[in-house]
Amino acid sequence: MVKQVKHLPLMEIMLFRNIPTMIIVPIMLKKMNIYFFGNNKPFLWFRGLMGTLGMITTFYAFTVMSLTDAITLLQLAPFFTFFLAGIFLQEKLSLCQLPFFIFAFLGALMVIKPGLRIDMLPALIALVAAFCTAVVQITIRYLSLTDHYLVIINYFAYFSGGVSLIILLVQKSFQLPSLSDYLVLILLGGVALLAQIALTKAYQLAPANLVSIFTYSQIIFATIFDLLLYQEIPDLLSMGGAFFIVISGYLNYKWKTNK
Image (cartoon, rainbow, N blue to C red; front, side, top):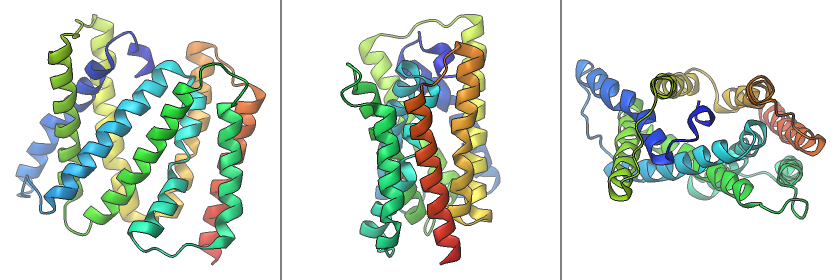
């Protein structure tokens, strides 16, 4: 959906993406009698900041890269999470997992193709998006000890929505969407909210390493959308890179479950 409205300003897409959450989640919080402003405010604000940076870089990657390449690089987020969890959450790191990360790194290089393409900036920005996503996951894991997941979602929506609105006003870059654009933007906001709630509940109901395996299916969906909507077929290097990243993620999952 982001790619469908890439002719609109990036901040405008971000604003519309957040509007349904900014309306619906506060109502849910009030009905559930949950304190709006949360308990761990510094980390709630930090989650909002990193989530906003992650959204900006992710949406940028979607608008300038093929969906397959962008989403493949975003699948590196679990590997960044592994190292960050060891540093900040004191989760034990194992050298046995090092080969999996080497495979993932090689897969990323195959997608980025250093030296074979003139403009590497979009791919590097996608890597920044993956890193921001990992930081957000670590922060959410920490916040889950102190705050309700809807409070965390609400902070993120208002922070990113507020930032995008301020930038739009300062730049005076708002463009009036067409009717078809409005439909896509409304759907984008609704789907984004459903995805956040569904993923959060999934992490509540099942181990994180099991849930993360299913997120690799995004590469398959992205390839299908690329083919059907944009007639873009990933080249062999991109397909090989996606394969390396998915296999390394699966092997890492199997290692954790059999440990």
